[in-house]
Image 1 (cartoon, one colour):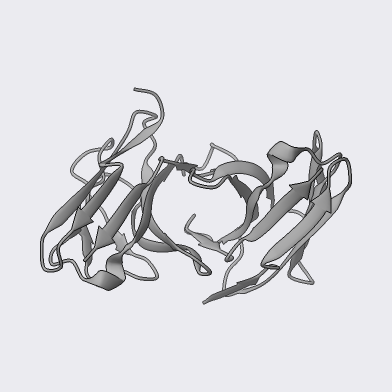
Image 2 (cartoon, chains in turn brown, blue):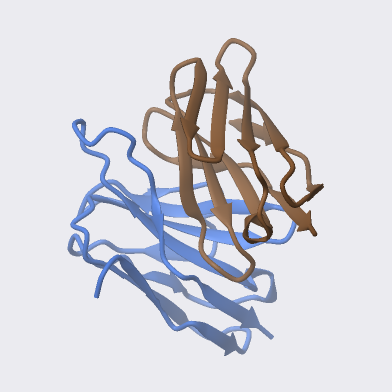
Length: 109
Length: 116
């Protein structure tokens, strides 16, 4: 089975940095995804890590440590439009995704 | 159409009624998935299909059935709806072939279903 944990809520100020942690315990591992989901909308893909280390994509970066079962998503230079839920998901060798409950990030002016 | 579509957008259904949620993608993805999303529980996989003609059970399959007659369509059927099936349902697809790299899933806009 899969056990994926992430904080329920985080609040930050516009222009600041926020780090969303995700820990996982899984029976199989073939990569970790981060998705963004605005209220009332579908999740959209942000990043994918399969090897240890940092993947940077503009203002967003994602880190993975397979030995620790740990990932984080780093959001820099926060903007109001970044207010959303961020979903951590782990894929097994069969390409199915298991999701955490999501972290709701609120950006305040 | 471009991407993945779902119908209806929302539905209110009486308990005991039969309901089919439709999902169509035009990206020629081999794999398709159905999830339900409930507050505090995140997205949970109901059923999936790795290729046309095959289906599999996810984490919460009871009370739901699927079929995959062709590549593009993946309908989800509730044979006899119950109030606990009130949820937002998302369909997704991905290209899970060996050479496609990241294999991220693309999600449809969702169907909001209320069972009374």
